[in-house]
Image (cartoon, rainbow, N blue to C red):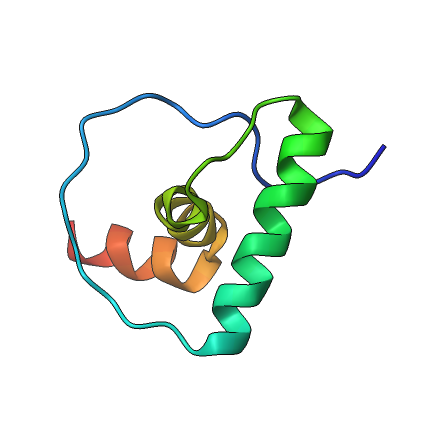
Length: 73
């Protein structure tokens, strides 16, 4: 079984943000959604819904960001 950094997506009230992605990033996002769906059994109908959890995970594991955040708090 593939070990992905994302697990099942939480159902939360979203805030709408519009972004443009390079085509290669969009293709990878679609591929990631397909792998995540096979791994978790949870179909990802809209791969864009992965962006928020990916950013959240990235920030949660960025040590320099955590250190800077603690320094400003």
